[in-house]
Image (cartoon, protein in one colour):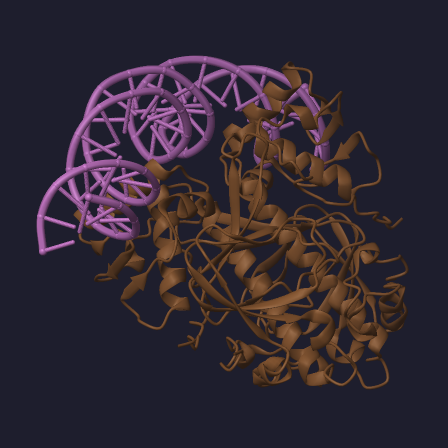
Length: 246
Length: 246
DNA sequence: CGGGCGCTTGATGTACGTCAAGACGTGTGG
DNA sequence: CCACACGTCTTGACGTACATCAAGCGCCCG
């Protein structure tokens, strides 16, 4: 339960901020959460919280994946982020959740009451700095998402997405996709057909291998395949070392 | 100089976080910056800092506008955010700037050395909470940008952009656009021609008025014109009261 | 082995990108 | 103050990539 090291981006701290804002070893967060957390199993497409719900709980993905999204009237759904094993979410920036959170596949979470985590005894500077690190990571992720959506070609967006997934998972070349084609489409701002066709095209051109629909093998110089890749690394400036649970 | 109240989103604080994380009256930030800041005038397209530069300065827009962006190899540019009068930027989440900052038009800024702002005397909890508020605002903006880019039709993106601009400016119906069509295109993930055509179409259909290219009048139920608007307000959950300088 | 869901593939329309030219407005110099 | 020139914005013609509508395949689970 919360027994992993948090995704560490702490190798890139703003040197100027005092300790309370410096991430430091984010394992302090797990430590503070250790006794507060309880496990929670969700089956596919189950909602964890809805947009507008009070932000009262902090979650960590153990196994599976979570999507946060919004809906437009005719049922059009837009996915803002995926959370993979090791990721925290729910420490929102408002009193009310700005997105709906659902699991994309059978998923195990750890849950802790924010009120409990932030009790006077628990709310150390270390905990606060860990929260700060999470917020920065969230901002970085969102900015990278916007950059991804700036690509005009479906293949570029898909490749950027696959690179993000690869960077956030352990293996360099083997990617597990714990979400449906529709989920990917709603994250990339495309239709499911275009996503599927792009997967096929990338496979046919030898850029990726796809033994099963939700397993992708990265082949050769994939980055060079992005027609207009950024001079600076577009998706994840520094690969995020992410300790996966179980 | 930094004499305005910061954009207040503090009406939506996570009630659970201790004071250090609660925005509180962000005027504390201006107060802390008051003596540290110096004015800086930039002419159109001038760079303020480049991607990769050390994050050492905090800026506030007094007049004009700033864009932060990245470049892809063939000169394709992608704009992540605009900063308007009253907005702070430069308090980045890393030691190095993740974007290049340039002014879109003749612009006046206030500049303060982060090291000075964050000296032991200045780094009060109030200052830190103000920084936290800025970071949350940045996250919200980035998420809204990603949502905007999720719209599949150019007119929808443009309308969402205009709504964002309207919400961030004083007047409800009269929008000043302190950036070129190319800037708007690079922010919306479109070409300049498509942006121009969308402006024309919206004008012809009576949704907006455009006395001059950079002045837009919002007419009638503009929101209803977005073909797939979000059930919940897409761009700015609560209009941001933004005190403009001079 | 059968059913259903997720994924893929096909055919067609349309919105946007691209290339190109022209109009407008703005700023500068005479 | 006017004329000119440059840059910004707009408009046009055309090609292309993606959305849409529709059908079919394949995998997984019951």
